[in-house]
Image 1 (cartoon, one colour):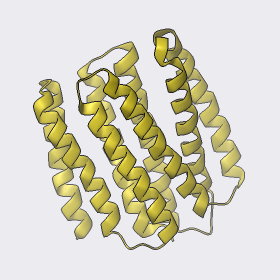
Image 2 (tube, helix red, strand yellow; image 1 turned 180 degrees about the horizontal axis):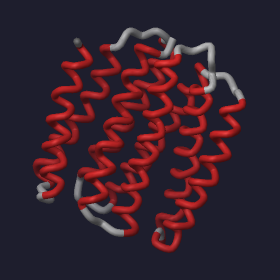
Image 3 (tube, helix red, strand yellow; image 1 turned 60 degrees about the horizontal axis):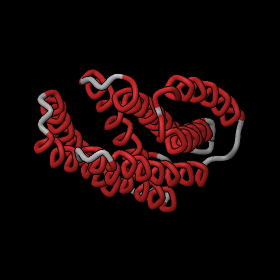
Length: 217
């Protein structure tokens, strides 16, 4: 029941966010996006803390992502770099959380190889457009690739509950895909389509990770 009370307003806020993004109404986007991001932190807090270490690490990561959401919602150009750094730190805590509970297993190496190939392709796609952001974006791509590799490790750790493992894997992959559209919007072609696809992937991924706190045991 508590999860429904989180999901219902989250869907409404996401719908409103997409509407105001379409209207390019930044005054409305900033508070709505901030409130929506607060909900995935609340969602994590409301879950049973089956693995306290995992919960606290993931929670710190979620808080950094909230900061990243606020930075990216602000119109100033320098806020993009601040948002990138905040999300990077969030991913670092996700990586620590995933490897805190997961053992290295064959899925770790399979997933890491697949992610490395995909991320390499994305980097070379973006590289001609990065300019002075080349190094920060490259660092970010490396970190988010490690984050997804960690999610593959969780997915392959059979000592953990299968429903929790699935939420971590799908949540991390959704986050990864959402960042592709953030990069496309920032460096390739700014258009509403990027937000229309990317924002549902992003918030879906974050909420799945938040809900995994109660199911990963």
